[in-house]
Image 1 (cartoon, one colour):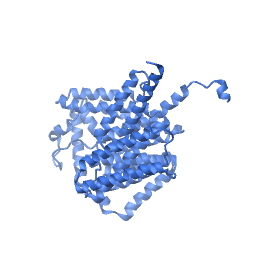
Image 2: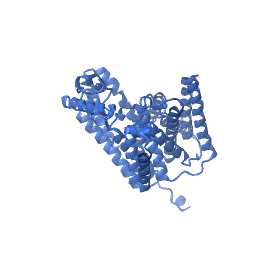
Image 3: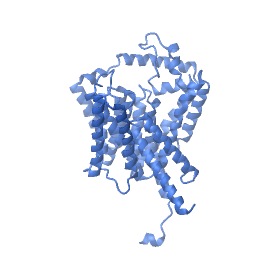
Image 4: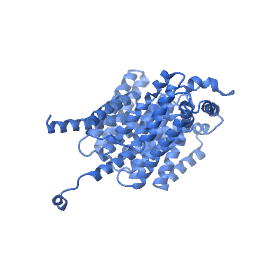
Length: 458
């Protein structure tokens, strides 16, 4: 094959990986099926590029803790009372390929901005869907909360939390939105118009499922189109502003306390890194809730309700599980089946799918060593994000966004097993890659051959 044909093939594969990663970024907030299809296609292209030696496999500071976490998870599955079920659950470890795929894809500033815009587009769709459900489809009760395109309201609220922090980071670190170009307005109008059409189909119960599938495909296509557009693409910050505003609104009406706590923790991190004005905005929002006392929100600010009491009892059971099997744990996906044997008297619910706490769930499932590896991984990721943000320079706001998002997931994870949600895990891995993509870009630019003297003089 000629050098020209080789170059064309390499460029085609690189663009395919970029488009698929952007489609993944847009759809992991909308549809797990669409996101998985985009992920595995992108990983397949990435493997081909690695085999052709067109790109090196990223080497990260997270390699050690991630490898240790994966190995111990598989060991725990092997010692599980139901190894087949546990190994089936352990297939989620394959999602970690996204981290390395994203570092490779996002190590260019224009591609990174495109994929982030695709993620913000997904956040806009997710939040708009939740708001439409709340105000027009009757998803306005604690036992019937808006979930948008997700299968569960808890997953939707976790994604809304992270989308809010991604958009807020863009606005705080990069400045207020500018006047949008016509092309950008057309994109936003098309998305919002599509959501209204989808709402009409759902209310009429006519082609609702088919309409949702078509819309999800359109969102994936818009994300890929944004990434693959040739020439400068208008990005005024309006998308980030809309996504953060609507995500905050949708997060409030979700009535999900762990996501509220996570969002506050993430906004606190953004304020400490950039401007104390953000802290004043957060304080003003909290004061408004105290003064206005909206009944639905105030009713959730309690620790005496049934779900809070149930968490207390299941955490006690989780500690007993850990004490019983501290090394390899009960096995992945085994907590639900063994819980009745550890359930404390007085627990409101006879069963639970998980322990509503990341630390207890991982330790109970996979053992204390695996928990140590997970904490090592999270600490390393957050530390590297902090260092990249402190380093400054173009694009460093994305490292701040990663740190805020990871902080929020850790805070919310004290009361919810958000690490177990595939959609949340995928979005977290995508954002975790941002600091390492910045570092790789800097290394690549530093390794570029110097210009000839004549060219430098000119």
